[in-house]
Image 1: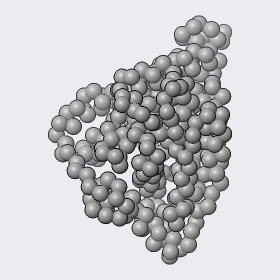
Image 2: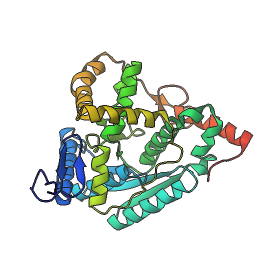
Image 3: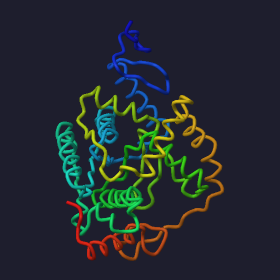
Image 4: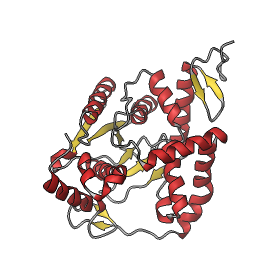
Length: 314
């Protein structure tokens, strides 16, 4: 006898929600997903005082799900998609093609920035001390440019596709290392500071990777199925695999971990953490906690590597 959808009782097809141990059909999955995202946005007040929302898109399932669901749930909200072309041979161009196609279909303005215009690409970090943690360097590059683009294009809030798995993986590592100041920065909403630092929201922070994958498939949303070639063997992927193993033994572990962080630990940690004082970077003028921002220091190192070894990216 075929499995039944736990919501409508009809045949469920192939959508299985492991944290609930239940099957769900296509139509119910779309409705379930959109209601869950709407509730997350409203619960954390993510769109409060938002005039123009910038949606960070990479071409992967999470950011494509984010773009689709936000456009469907809030069709009158002013939105602009932002794509950072990282110069990863083949992969970055494939992602750009998908992003262009989806934004064109939805009628969403797309802003594209190419890091190669600044003299380097992400693969060039393989010739720097960041070779073994290239994902961290890439994250710094993307965060900086998302904020800079928001400042230049009048975007007051940036939405990213960070899902529950991403969040739990980062929190898992930070709690193990006792990085209190870093832990307090992992939250559904990060307020903006002045005109040069946009607010950040994570509408998919309570959605699992499985749910995002099901949603793009159920809505027929194009996405890049392959992983970034530079992520293979990274510590991030190993931690995610460990968390998946725990989830198999303890269904709902990811949700419990995240909710404990937000409801129990985060409020107390915020009380004891130091208030960060921002200043303008002496090189680029963007907000930072030191004289020179982490991006400018990073860029300086990779440009030295390019000068010594030549470019390795597209």
